Image (cartoon, rainbow, N blue to C red; front, side, top):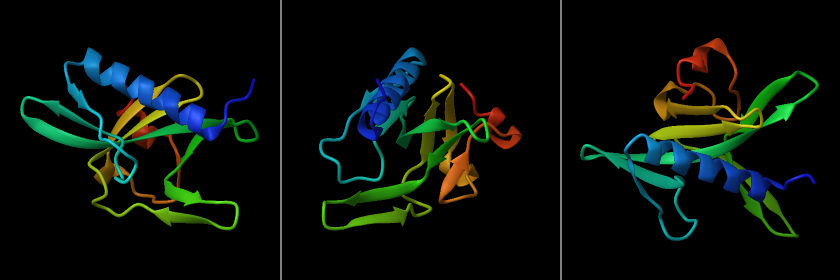
Amino acid sequence: MAMNSKERGDIAVGQAINYFMSQGYEVCLPIGDKRHYDIIVEKNGTLNRVQIKFAGLYKSKNQCRVGLRITGGNQSYSYSKKYDNDAFDSLFVYTERGERYFIPWKEVDCRNELTIETNKYKTYRV
């Protein structure tokens, strides 16, 4: 059974919470969906706002890619907007291959779609 985008996002959130808790972080879950970050993690007194994404596998290029956009709308219209440079502190990506990446947002040089399995992001695999 194929998962929809909300279900894939839920899997990524679960993976992020598992990772951060196993590394000794306190995980805080904001109420509602009005922030650009999904969770806040704290370790040694430092807070980090984290956006969580699922990277799907595009078989044509055999690459996992993730959209870096805010999307929404209803039956009448839809929209897509890029994140600002200060929208959150870090990006956590869980891929369809089961890999996890924890990347400082300032290290991500694109603001539309990210191919995660490149040499640039290999050092951020956790």
